[in-house]
Image (cartoon, rainbow, N blue to C red; front, side):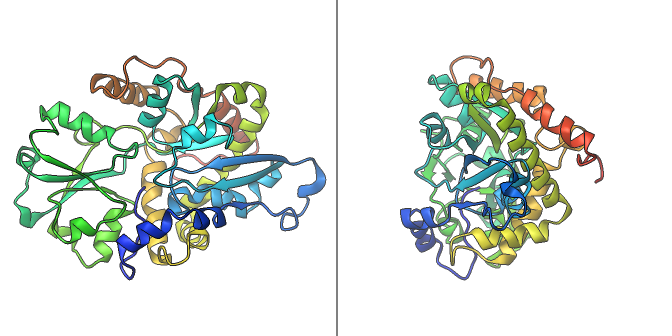
Length: 361
């Protein structure tokens, strides 16, 4: 999710440039009525989606749906609003700055725990892409070796899996190790100033490999295999908005699912398209294609292949919620945190039109 750096540019300089407000505003994109034949045939409904991060292939499905006119076909004039390190999607949606938002489920549950009435309506990523990585040269072989190590963690809503895992292992992060608030780059890791670093399979791991590091030089710890994986990248909206605009929500999901289905079919196209939306100099086309391919592995996985993209598995939701409660992320079990009826209506329409992709494509 985080750094979008490719090796030719200094990561630290890149991270600073990405948070510039001017760049974020320039990256806001929307459908052009002139570019979408027939889009004027019915009144267009303006909809804004706020991303979890800056434009990149992590969000390729929405860009594909926009580019191919799927939103316009549903009568939606969609604006895709970039996120960033200082942007909390839940707050943007709660305050009316966007109709829909994207974030990891623990972050959504935390905001609900604080009184925000936000509801997940589609779970795009079915499994976690988050990892802790270390160079084999550190001597780290298992979690038993974490004691006394310098560990990079993202404290921007993405720390919850780490905290849950440390609690499960019986570690006190404040005493048993040195936890570093990892920046949105891999500089410290690549310069061996971190013993372990956070990395997403679809982004930072690629950045490390693109820097010349070989996969066999790394030890990779999978939060899923550790039994503390939490759901990432879900679509949410305010409960009040959803009740008043049910049809809009269904149409938005329908078009978004179609966009993501196309990413599964052609990640190369999706990566190239995402690259065209990314901030100038922030990445390379090759990295965005790598990202699109890796994102497909998280999205077109497990229950999604049976039910369709965006399905919320109640068992996995409950696991995420229980882990969040057990390890202090939230203080009470959530009620009404997701509503699958909007997604169900969207996939029903897609199925009726023979547009729903399942199984092996």
